[in-house]
Length: 358
Image (cartoon, rainbow, N blue to C red; front, side, top):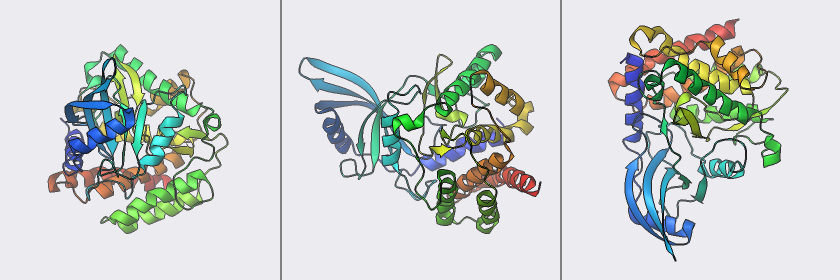
């Protein structure tokens, strides 16, 4: 395993280690409220061990007892981690739930949602309930294990195409028809993209990592150089490959919509590309070589994606987001992992500053 793959896997474990624990009695009460029926709680476990570290995840089975029989369901509770070792300064699961609710009948693959406890009165923490879609996520380390490694080269290409096909479906969605005009993060700004940049700054201000002052010029540069978005789209916001659930080498659901906003298709693609970039120097030790940027953009076009402009600004934006996440996580990672994260961060600092100088 490459150092970067090991560090990513260990960081997920470190993040999840101190998340809030959900009381089974409270969970049963919430389920009874949602389904208006008696509930028998069965197998309960955490989420995927090597994927996702922003929110708490509880995967479980339950029997919904109604007159005439018991319906078995596999469910997921997504909840506020309520821990100091969290990534974001604030978790707005209410807005994420409302977004998913609006997209239930849209031609995009989102999990089916069932109920929300916005205040945490029932669960003890805020959270929402959704059905567990079939399949497995791609691990955070991407190219070291999991579905991409297990697939043959032709199968792997089909996985990439389906990932991009589903992202293109989000980008080409008539989001206004689903009540999402002006949908944005809650922060200062004259438009959704400006609010999005400033929303990320809130986590940096809250975390105040060692490199705090170093990021501020990037924040100002992004605001000062923001291009006009001529064709705004609904962005997923965090479309890294680990947020696609795969079943039989096809996307069964797109997960983790907490960063969604109206914005630019280019930013979603830039996030995918720059998330793969640090793996490229380690291809000699990886079982799978990441696709090139040119191949990735070509596949996006092949599956009906939006016309894409220059990505340089959006790569800086993506680096800005990743640096904020890494800076926040560096507060609680084990020392050995934190040192590897510092080396990974150097890649993104250099990339952002190189583009900004051009």
